[in-house]
Length: 107
Image: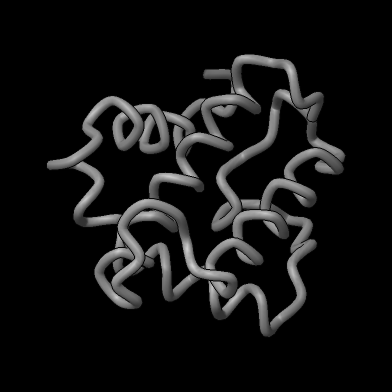
């Protein structure tokens, strides 16, 4: 997926927000993520740029290609479990767009 597309920008913002929520709550970093969480963001953005699905990328949970290493997949799942429920209250538009992507990857 090209980094300048609206879909990439929205997904990048979503992962930054989710990791930011997690890092603030778990590690106490409010302004910038800690090095561990910054590594997660960098990893996800790198994988997102190389996604073979491009603009038709499904949400990762529904993807047939599991491109994340197992250890990183576990770390990201932990972030998602923590941040997912909080997204609806704190960032409803991002949460809604992510939810809609489950049903239509073209959004």
